[in-house]
Structures are given as C-alpha cells and as structure tokens.
Length: 212
Ligand code: VGL
Ligand code: ZN
Image (tube, rainbow, N blue to C red):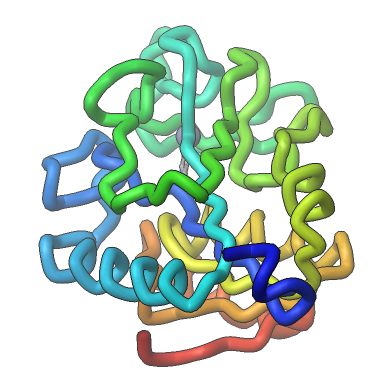
C-alpha cells in the first residue's frame, strides 16, 4: 500500500501513550481526566480511519523499569506529584506507571501490523515525555523511522496533552515537521497546564485542529 501511494503519503500519525495506566477506563495509576470508554472509542475510530487512508502510524509507549527515577516510590519521603530538582532539571514525582510488561503499559488502541511502536523511558535515570528523545538527550527510534518513511507532516494526538503530547509536538516542530495537533483526541492531566500547553504548541507552529 505504501508503495502504490508513493509520495502522496508524506503524512504520518503519532498516537502518544494511549496506555491503560493513563486512563480512567482501566483505573490506571496515573489516570488522566476524561479518558473514559467514549474517549478510547473516539481515538480508536479516528486512528482506524487514518490507517485506512494509508497513513503510516507510529505509537509511542511509555515503558519504564520499576526503578524509574520518575516514580515517587523510588524517593523515600517524597509525596506523589511533587516537583523535585534532579541534576538541575525539574522532575515530577509520578505514581508508578507503565512499568514494562505489566497490564498498565498496554496500548489500548488497535495497532495494525504495518504500524510502528516506539518505546521510551527505559533508562531508569531519565524521564522521557517526548517520543523523540529522553531528558538525557538519548534518541528513540522515532526520527529514523520517520526519515525511512519519507514523512514531512505529522498528525499528533493522545495522552497526556500537557506532558508527552506537548513534548512530542515541540520536538517534531524543532525537527522541521509540519504538525497538526488533534486537540479533541487529547486529554490533559491538569486544566491549567493543558491550556498553557495548547498555547505553547500553537506559538511554536503547530496547527490546532478541533473535531475528530
Ligand atoms: C506521561 C507523565 C509521566 C505522558 C508519561 O504520557 O504524558 N506523563 N509519564
Ligand atoms: Zn512516564
């Protein structure tokens, strides 16, 4: 299919971290408000449509070891959601989530055989909101895959809008991709940071698209 559509298909789709632990539907440990069955169904349908149009899909998957630096439980005496300074970076102390090979890490959207899964956050020392690279600057496979596929424009959506979606959108723009952010296919952890994230992504050059 990719060959027959050739250069018409310079658009890729990044589905960010639509995983059990980030959803209310699965009573996830870091459930993002508004991630009910209806939300997942909407994302499933939109993603299926994009795939049927012949667009290449890239799923990111938060994939942490149990000893990950972002888990408050690995920092004795620290409360969940506190922001602490580590090596000059601000690190939010999240509840343990998306631990490798657990049900909480499962992607809840159907992943077609032709799609790619890009895992991130495997280094216990660095958090990795962006699908492109972690806080230590170590790149994932994503850039290579997009280059391999000749992608120029990206449609991006998923969880959470104020963290991993935002970081992925900003890195995509920095790398020179045109970006469409599908706002209605995203949910944020917190209303204030979510509003702020949309403004930041728009100011950086993302097209903000409503509807699904
Ligand atoms: C995320 C917090 C911690 C996300 C991942 O997918 O937005 N947020 N890890
Ligand atoms: Zn994480």
